[in-house]
Length: 343
Image 1 (spheres, helix red, strand yellow):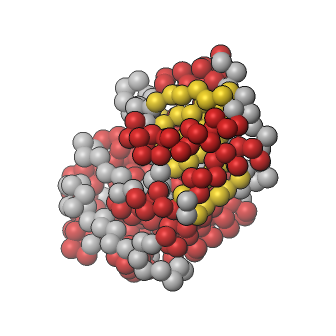
Image 2 (cartoon, rainbow, N blue to C red):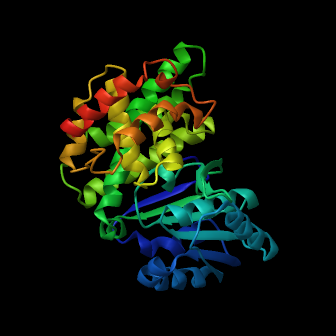
């Protein structure tokens, strides 16, 4: 993270909220944003620390629309909010990242799940008025506290999804190299290296179970991915063909799966399509029981084929292997069958 950011990750770090705010000289009105369930579990402890350094105002999030994020931003401006403290999952963090960005207000982010790199990314995924998701540029949180105990108490499937999202850096980097070779994009060496490090940090870990030490590594890996994005001001270092496929599933499929599982499936499928080895990725996912079999995810053959063939429409300025390789229905049928049998 850059000098304006502060990352703290470890056991019982929820107790460092007040210290973190004080270290940044934050006082006055502080907007605490959470949801009913998360607030019931951890809110009392966080609110008490906020009240020690400032005057607390509260907002409870139950949806993540662009309109709602703008209303939070409007409240922050109208009531002279000096800092936003966001605690919860991706929905809450995305609303607050965008509101903080629009108001240039410091943001302390306290994720309670680790399902994707959105915990630290300069991207907010919010819903349009038609209910479709839209990825919007914003800024990384000014401060980030990851309490590994809280993450371990979250549903394990969310942690597995975080593993899947980081693994997808594998194909996103291949796509970036490919786009540069075709003069369709420019390379940023720092961002590439940061994304590569995020991937390597995870894949080279000595742990083979989801424990506190592994959660610490996963958290750092997801933050590194966020930093990579901040270097170029886009998701290019961590989002390639596998993300385009996932966006197509979000847009066209009735079945909604966690983002991390979708991009992990997309990673393996794309590696097959470009005739690259998949063993390292598959073995790593299997080690942590990250099951991305398309049938298990209730993605049928027709949906898989349609979304793969229409993935490039999801983001017009994101050039990937999918723009040039054979995506014929017969070939995709074979790939789908292999995925069902092998995963």
